[in-house]
Each structure stands twice: as structure tokens, then as C-alpha cells.
Amino acid sequence: MNLTRMALLALLAGAATPALAEAPPPPPPPAFTQCAACHTVQPGRNAFGPSLAGLSGRRAATLPGYAYSAALKKSGLTWNAATLDRWLKGPQKLVPGTRMPFGGIPDAARRKQVVDYLLKL
Image 1 (cartoon, helix red, strand yellow):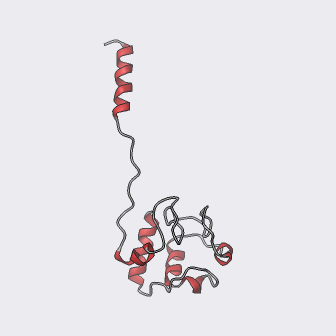
Image 2 (image 1 turned 45 degrees about the vertical axis):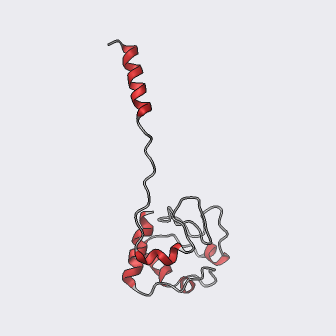
Image 3 (image 1 turned 30 degrees about the horizontal axis):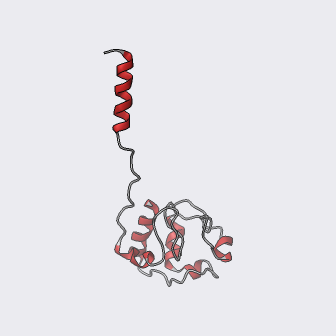
């Protein structure tokens, strides 16, 4: 087989390989149901609340295209396991003046399930 023919076959084989699709997010825990009422986990798609995709390691109130409260913008928080746990325990206690209308998840085990899920998005 000559070199031109081999190159053509290699090119065709590569074209026939489907592009890798973005992996779907992991299934949410039951405790996430209340979060899903206002938030999406799809990148770039905000709802009543901002998208939670790619939250891990992001500074609070920095997702483009969402109007955050001044209090959250000034909070200086970076989303990680510890800050998410504190936030989900009581957003208004952690950041007085935030507009998030959520009373929190008092149960530590349920909060951990949501935090673990959010960090995988």
C-alpha cells in the first residue's frame, strides 16, 4: 500500500470517529431537589439563580450573565467544600444581604451530599 493511500485511510478513519461528547453531570442527590427549583447545572444556562456548573474553585458572584447581590459580590468567598457547607447551612447568615431566598439545609449529611455533588459539576 502506498503512502498516499495510507494517509487517505487514516484521514477517513479519523473522520468516522465521533467527537467525544461532553459527559452528562452525575445524578443529583435527593437533597438537591430544592436547589433545582432555581438553579440549573448546565453551563451557561441561568434560571432564577445562576448555573451551578463549574462552581468548584470559582469566586462567588463572578459567573458572567447573572445579576448578583452587592453583598455576595463583596463576600470574597471562593466555592469549595467548606464555603459551600457554610453557605448551604444558611446563606443569609454567611452573607447578610444576599438575595438568595433559601433557609438552608440543617442536616449535615444532606448538606454534604449536595456539596459533594456540586463539586463534581
